[in-house]
Length: 506
Ligand SMILES: [Zn+2]
Image (cartoon, rainbow, N blue to C red):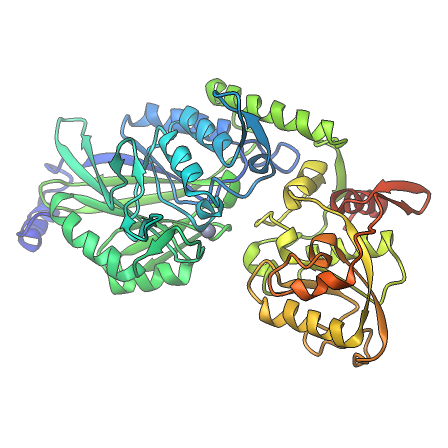
């Protein structure tokens, strides 16, 4: 990139390479969208101690390994919602600390923000997590909005988080190159302490400053893939976007830009073997997707950190009466709980949840939940454990029955299915047509009384735009429910677990 005689020298390189060319080789190890430190699917898939082993193997192949995580890792997770006693002896929300400590042990070099990093409501807690990172954060289009309204870069280690990184690499024969890395995040999470600059403009301006200083440039892009493609088209010439936000692996080309995303929760990682000829600027990127499964040994140092947090989590879960490793459902189809799906459409996991509610409270006219109850932001395959249920509904909560007039029910359904579309207040519904809003095939009668089963959180009027529901609930939701022969604690997690055990497979 820095060579202004690129075209001329490239011809020279083509003529002489590989006889005389001495490219510098390095490896980029890419993860994205990792919420779980331990393996999932009954221990089969993912696990950061296994990724650490892969990293160690790559380091033996080539000492120049750059490990990146393309955003979304501090939230959501069941562990993250719990508290622990910090060094000052205070109760502190875990809020991603388990991820920071595990990634520190694993050996990570660079991250950018994902939208879920801004799930942390208190900017000082996020600042603390950034400060606890041994790895470097970078972002070119997000700034912190201070209490006085001023915009400043987020900070790490007493310095501003930079819009780009210059990473020096020394080749086998002593040749030196510089890898330029810039991070970008989609403006999805509209929390008041973050200000976003437009993605393409910020990226282009940063690249303009970065390019003359680097032999190879890569983006860490936490964007929708269509935004990645638009960015690659608008700002061409960056050979590699290590992307995030999507949870299923993909690889696409736009011009000479390759966009890659690995599977969420480190079920796979991308390994990019890069060659750069510093004399002529020629680059090649050879990318392979590596599955992370139980054929890979755990790296002991990382495993020790994972187990420390897992022991703590299991202690809490067992204290709540759960058996986290217990298998409760065998899946024949994928249960869909990606946020982008569950907040915009009726998904099978939403329907399964509502079936569990109907099983526990039969005979109602309508069942609905706010999709924000379901925080997994991932899909489930294979075996479902109690831990999977807990991380799907990390906040739990009672389910209650209320009586609403048709007029109020109509307003609630319009709000939950239309006004709240795309948000956590979007409804998953049962016995309601989500398009026509008919109930059991009939138009809602405004004067009639309807029996409705819903989460107590929504019944109390605490969901967005649904505060009017609060006046119809008297707070009398029972602590336990009789479900068949069993007495089950009235918590959506217990009701779902009970129902999953009853049906056995789905
Ligand atoms: Zn995301």
